[in-house]
Length: 247
Length: 289
Image 1 (spheres, each protein chain N blue to C red):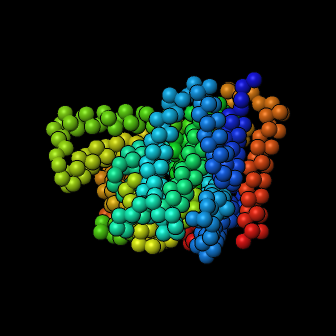
Image 2: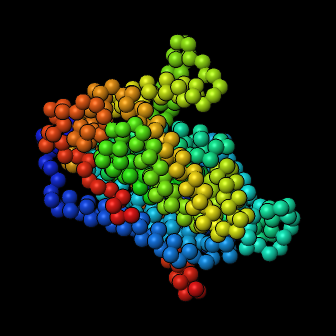
Image 3: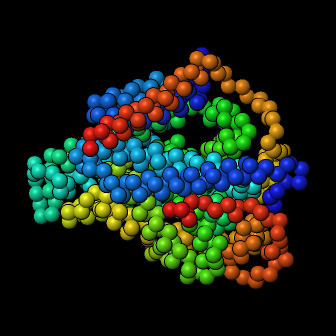
């Protein structure tokens, strides 16, 4: 049986919420490992890992700089140069935070990279707010490569007209303007044409719609989604209740 | 353009009231979360992973952003809805590039501010929030900043509505003001959810303030004030350059631009006072927060 895209999203979302609520290092590491295993099993690891690294490496480095080099609350000083104090508490705080954020990022990326976008849009495209959100999501994901390609073509065209990017901030700004203005202008023009075409096909209509793509769903999955959402809410509630009771 | 349709029924007053209520609730959720976080400064922030504070920040800001989207998205005309994906792509492409380099800026709001100037504060707020949600499919760490992004879109729209884009030198000033408010609202998210910043250069600034003995929230707020001020001033200037470079035919196709005379130049176009252009006047979250 195929997994409904909303079930996948609910599973990833509630795993992320529960990991944040639990805030325990072993759970964070376990969730990260599970996310990696899932993405290897789904065959998306090759695309997901670079995306995860692009997010997590700067974040981890930043956490290390912020807490590793200066943690005024820390008592166990490991090394000190002038104002820089490396403390054990700072390093362990940075490690815990990095593990927690990594778990959330990895599980959400594992979900979004194995999701079939057409299925998700078909599942969302009831009318009204869900349809509009589905349109924005699908349209962005399909426009990304197209717009990147168009930006590249514009750069080539301007270069063939003699655009040379010299050093210095003013030259760079002028070069940016030469490439950005045609890009934005053509995008705004296109959007106007697309709006007229969509409106002519009843984009804003609130009547019933027919979808040619049917995403299989089952009562079991619907129930599972409900359970997952409730589990996430319960984790938040338990954690906040403990917090309020403890302080 | 495609504002009120001639063939489709217009929404009932009850639906309009319900959307206005959702908008107010969304703005209240964002404002209340911020006030709670700043007043209580949850004590467990450095005593251990401050997950209760992280949960309050996450759920409050996200719920507010989602309420705003639910309230605003159905009211936007098709011409604006079609521009939103374009704005998201501009945000993502430019933000992804700058975010990973060693500059303490983000430049991830050019598309949002562009929409806000062309289509108004409500469209700007929805674009900001949607941008964070869609971008989180590639980079989940931007999801908690949805409320801040919505606020920036709304403020940019208000700046355009009250004529700050009519004089070229006023655009960076409006950017400064937006940057102050946006930075102050986003700082608790960075502090409580991530315990730091997502870039190396911004992290170095926070570390410098921390080694002077600031609390984490104070250090990140100061860093946000430095980075966001410059960042939004640059973004507003870039958007002003772009909007004025567009031919009049392209920019005047937006009812918001015509009605509020957003751009300088000979106004008195006959449609400037046309009463039937009714979209995008819904006010976003800026007034409450």
